[in-house]
Image 1: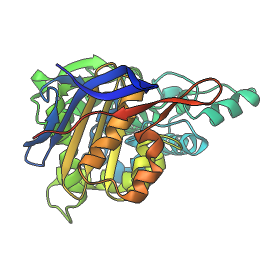
Image 2: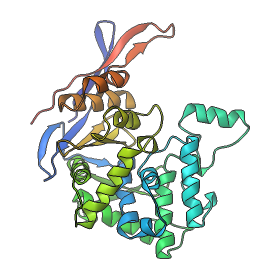
Image 3: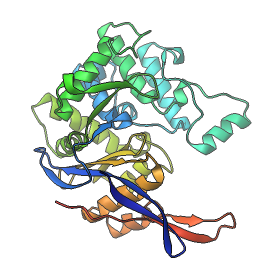
Image 4: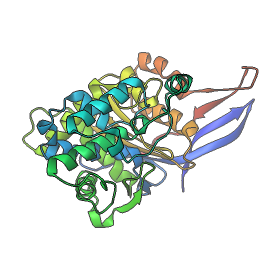
Length: 337
């Protein structure tokens, strides 16, 4: 059963609630705090992106194509389709000797509204480079080119690049590959179901790797490189006005935050080495944003300055069409051990 995580008030009464599940795990996989069912199987969606990008480092593709921190960060991100995102995706494609036609992620308008409006006003249409999964897809294409694998059918679950990604997901989450349920993501490539606790553990491993110096373990060193790239370039992990970017900018070098879809969220907390996994049962961001900030608050990560910067996510107001405040969306949970 899910726990009530967020209450939505109108006037003096609660009008609706959002339920969900939270798991907070340390680097050994030990469950430190939880609410709801930490063993609930959840679909990683875009939470998997840093793990999906890891083979680019481990196979030597990053070195072969001279990918720097910006290219690595964008491979971990869910992009808003802003101009700097598109330019960087194009830069990677150019380095691979490929074109936008090789991207099999589909087309949707940029999620960054001003960019979408500017495109429309210029009479231009979005391309696959505006897709929020374009960075993940160029990472997969880089692996294909590096290994000499075919690029035309790289989204196929049986393609070598997807089998490599599945092996990596199993390795980092600690879930045997034969137990992972594979589905298809919104961008057409495989995506993975694992227990919430294991998702949180994967992010605890990201947190611990980020503060490990000069590790001789290739997995730890690869995770550390991805974390350093993403923490240095938070706008490439999401975009302007996005929760992930805003958390990382408000708490620089302290938190790696990554959204999924359908109410999934994960965070790597560098100072404590903890990983956080969140699943909002109804899949709605209205319940997710306050929950994510309140978890940071209860784990004593949220500084006063960060709390002020993130207040609109933490306690958003409900306004009517006259712009009058008529209610509030507020966290309603306490983490338990």
